[in-house]
Image (cartoon, rainbow, N blue to C red; front, side):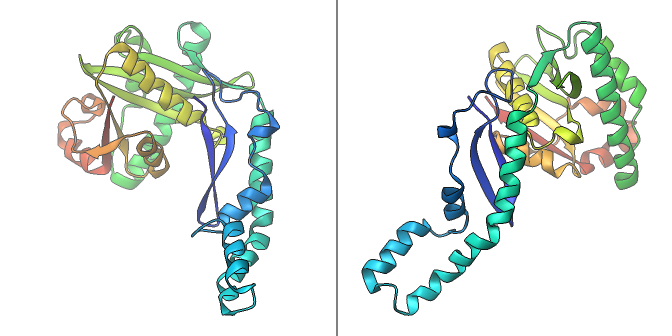
Length: 276
């Protein structure tokens, strides 16, 4: 199933027919016939209450385009012209992604991938710890968390878990994990993609793969927790079926937070789940 790239233009969502994922790769061979034409996109984007071409035809049939109702159409026509440069920029970015190196998910199972995972998780957790300290007064033992993630074979590794790094152009640029909480409940952890690859569909591809893995393993529910400032991540999770829930007892941060700050942590985080 392909992943479709979404870009925001002038407050509206512009969805383009560029499949960004087949199997483990976020780029696939795309025939020009799969691309929605620039004119079609402009028409749809500039016509929030209907297809511009259809409404123009209706105006022509009803009044020949010579009455006051033409005022209803001129803003959309102006919008087509105003939005053209922005659409061109979005198209250029998407073409660059399509023509760039393939994005792959690679299982962490050897020295090279373990080293990459250690570096990426450390980078992610140091960023989270800095933001959590500044925003919520929380602190995390990053070194202890990284050691636990890489050295505890029962945590993220098969058969009960999954552990991936994201590879792009020969470099490792992201990470994501699945952990068993109970026989029927799993948790997604350490979802992270470096800044330069955000918007290329790597995060979506990663979370979809982890959900597919959870289903294949036999889990019925997948949960996650995420600090409130990570709003973009929350939007991604909701788009694939997650909903907010009350804090769950077996959440992964419990063992890394002192008892006196656990309530502060819970009030600073969003807890979510999806049923498979």
